[in-house]
Image (cartoon, rainbow, N blue to C red; front, side):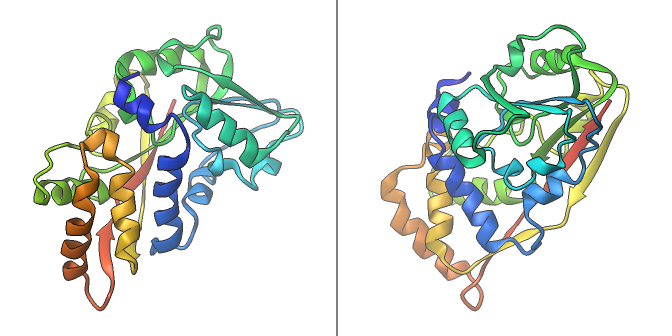
Length: 254
């Protein structure tokens, strides 16, 4: 993995900061994790692999949806993330944890009934190799689920914010709602997309500043920019609310 990505996800701190702002300020009150999980079709006996599980929050309070003979393997390339996921979810007889790089999945062909890779494919250095590996370990006719962001939501807003600060780091567009379908169609016969309706109404601008700073290893944002950023965004708020667009969705492939 890219060194900046490794630094970004060495521990769960930066990711937790970003999750927090969505939990506090999303206009869509259905939790993002609930929206993600409601797409899953889990049948008895399913062997499920999640790549890039992060903090495990997506599964918090939802492990009871696993049929008694199903098994979930949560994986991440970051050992720090896996340790956090274990703390968040605790011990569960149907759940295991393993450090895995999507570009080199250590399982035989057709090992899994379901593969998940949410909000992480844009970080993969060789995305086509990673997707080839997903297709290889997925049983024929089974589904691959992958959520991502769009180019015109919060990431565009943050890129514009960084440029206003004279910082020319760019949030990547290697796998987005705009180009994801075409990329996935090179590996899967059927690709469907579902878009989530949402936005952020932020009442404490410092939370937005913290969000931007959590991306510092990716964008080159520096600590000295914080106060200036705070003042600029406070001026752009309306009645004390800073509106930030969101563009997220889910691809379902088989």
